[in-house]
Image (cartoon, rainbow, N blue to C red; front, side, top):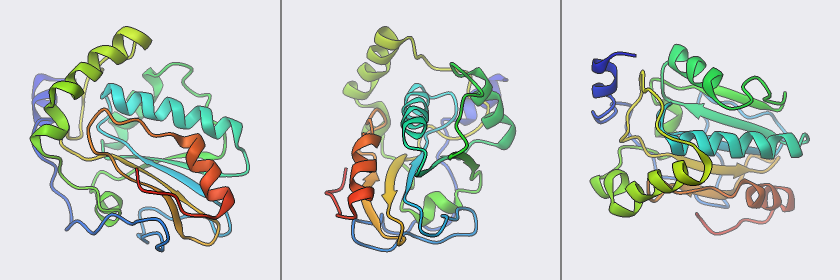
Length: 200
């Protein structure tokens, strides 16, 4: 990791035009970058850049939920480069313990992010006092701090969604702030019931 790589993470991401965020009750967006298995409920987590403590917490929570629900698919989508994503994954606690129903998809071109309505964040989303306090609080409570950022943008909005076996979005939305947490167990309950819930 070089200074220039770390510095470049502060530039806004450049990707395709941003679609509307899908709301519960609407069909899941389709893109070649991200395909869902037919007849299989799926939980998706679009991560912030690899190195972000909130991306790490999100991935660890997603992995734990996937381990407990082997009948569902779980997708973690990274917009960092393949090499940076792999390096980051190997640096996480209990690396290699991902269950077979959890896949990591690299979307460096932001094709899937854009299709799911996840674009560039505003200043308050990334650098609000509450969000910055969240960085310290997460590190203090769980030892999850910033890791080196080799690629990706700090301004990329994250999000989480739950899609039922018929391909209908039932849960989730875009993160309102960089430090927002996602309740994946709630997402599982919603997609398994087939009844849409409110947006995040």
